[in-house]
Image (cartoon, rainbow over all chains, first blue to last red; front, top):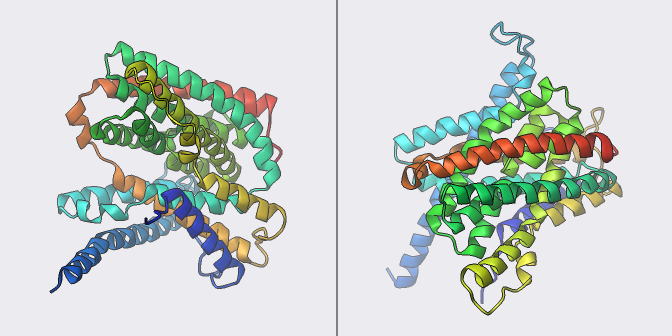
Length: 34
Length: 370
């Protein structure tokens, strides 16, 4: 049976992936500037 | 071509619409940011005495989303791209990232007031809406979906309630459309009302969070009013969102046993199934920030905290653009206008009650420690 990731969990996974990328310096604060 | 190859090609084609839709949202978010930057530093817009900084990005994002919505429908490209307009997903990513900028102490102190406010608001608004919709002769399923949407949190609550009461698909799309149509103007009007009443930011945040139906517009109104208002509005709304599961369970119980007269009872597991899991991500992010794993944003030396804060703004901007893109009036023709009248009366009731309750709780009884 295929487990389906809900939108809620997907949002948490995406957000933490972005946090990790920012913490290791791959996402730079300069080019993300809003 | 084999059946497998045909299926794979169809699957690839299915992905093109959502990807193009998402790319369009990104382009529109850039446009919204550009528009905001054009007017942000202007002291007096059009000679009306309105400073450019009051036109914050949620407003621009919703406007460009609305314009694109009409253009896409005119050129008949809307339905193809629609799967890429993921308001709820973008918003929840933004809310988890927002957790990285809020100390857990703020969440705890604000949550105390938010829980009391949520219990008062959800109970009063739910039963007022249920009663009024009954007076207007609306079907029980529509009453349940509408009451849950207005009292808790718009779109996701409407979906949760509809699952519990087995509402018709058109009832869900109707309420979803109604929620967005009402929430968009409120996102702009309520910060003006709060400003006219000289509301402190924490009280204004609680007012927006307790009143506006959809979380995206709550965050938008908070962003327009100020940074603290954005944080408190998000905490208050997240607290209200947590009640979705409880209401979904109670509704399923009521409809199964009272309306349909069945003997079997729904399982309390529904409370966890409907629990908004992004709230857990929000709390975890706040704990990581509180314990120093995630640094605070610095204006002198930009760090990971700055990058996360900027990504949060981008995620919210994508959500506000999508909200404008998802606005639709066509559902109203199908079901008539009496549910609209009920919805608007309850929204006014909700606004006035939220004004009093948020001021008492966040202004006097439990002012959050900021």
